[in-house]
Length: 181
Image 1 (cartoon, rainbow, N blue to C red):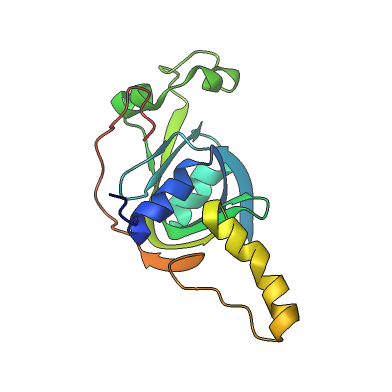
Image 2: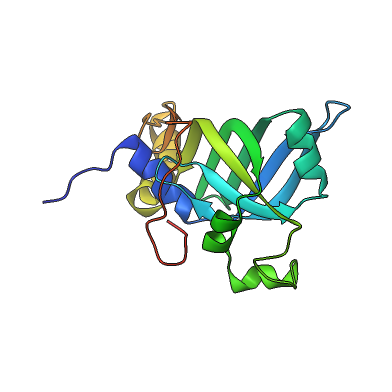
């Protein structure tokens, strides 16, 4: 029997489809700074983990202002946004858990490189736009319906688009061999 996923499950499923995200921090001049980051892990509660260099601007900006936003988009198919707080972590055990060979490009000394810092994004609010699967057909049908009936497009909250509060402040235990959920 098929059960409809909860909103948090749907959000997490969309989120785990992305391997890159835009991390938005705030500079000391209070300007937004955006940069692409590889997602090292998505926790069960939708917290995110990224690896970066200890001397990077994003680490310094997060140390000065913990408010961040993360955005992932796949063309017109799906988009997720997380608003929350971030904290740098120098936990060597967790760094080794999240390590992937792809990071060798930025950290040639490997997982034990002392310059590696994790950025833990603790999600507070999430938003999603889902035009995948059956929602893709529904989304494509809306303009046709609007033209034919002159009605306003119907986007059902929780189906194609939604907002949710994320469980924040707790760390999930890795649940897969490569550290990625």
